[in-house]
Length: 299
Image (cartoon, rainbow, N blue to C red; front, side, top):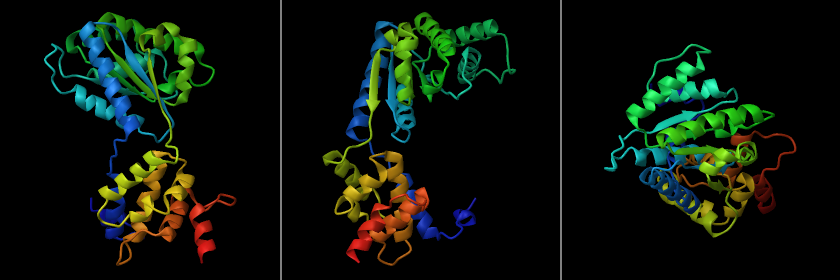
């Protein structure tokens, strides 16, 4: 499918500039620290044949899913430890219970689609056979906060008990990522969190040196437009607009790049950032746009 077919009011040059921003991956220091620690915990638990794992809490848009993708990519590299280069990954939703968790792991193990409510005992048997056969290096769980969100303590305890049994029986490290709701697991099932005892929190960027380094990395990685403004006078305004959230930052820069790409100079300015803020958030009544405010003062 050609990009022009979906261009709408955006030109191909504009869409190409936006896509370049979308494709930028910046492994900032906090991300690298958590990534290195996750790999260390998983490989150490495998070597020592101990059940263990990691929980990572972060706001939406702070790179949780990307973290799992990077960890999986590294774990799939053969390491000579006797384990096959297999890594299971599942993503949960708000309907998760022991049946759905077992079904998700079965699908990750390569079993075909299951009936809506199959017999849990049979499912557990098949999961055990699959884990014994494949010997995966880890189970990676995205959106894990759904286990314990809402008034679901009994269900959450049952699901984490299910995980705990497989961790113990098959020396299966678990790496779960989710929102700050994961904090409740330590109260709901301390036996589970006693095994998955390493807990990291990735917070939004405060304004400061690391924020400027992040903006500088985006500016250096993008060539279709000039993003030099982002690490200069606009750095604080961009932080005000995004609250230090990576996804919000990338969305803002994507739209700004598309606006700048329409002009011959292709240099992002405050007006591009103002339009980008409206594009990404909508010009809602009462919602402050810091870029329009500054531009109006300077006019």
